[in-house]
Image 1 (tube, rainbow, N blue to C red):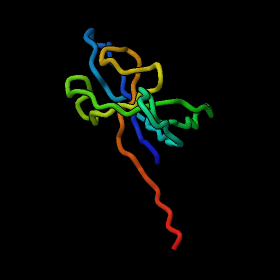
Image 2: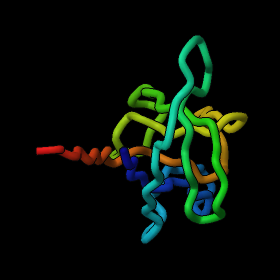
Image 3: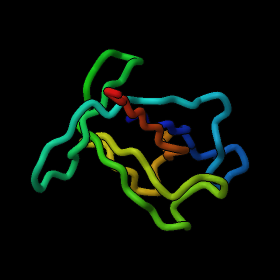
Length: 104
């Protein structure tokens, strides 16, 4: 399964932080596994950018926490949770792709 996301960041050029889409920063990562049980970050993600694996989760946020045109689902890595006030870029999920194989 692939997760496509787009990074958003806060624009402080006009004095008041405003959520603004950073152009041309779309990315897809592969869910390569998961952990069964009560884990905060149950999904294993392969990051092709640096060749590392990370534990992650998908989380829905409220409409007031997201940019106007973004889906209300964020991709969070273990130890990097979206708080809605950070000045760091964050990943909002655009869509999820799945691939099915048939043995017929």
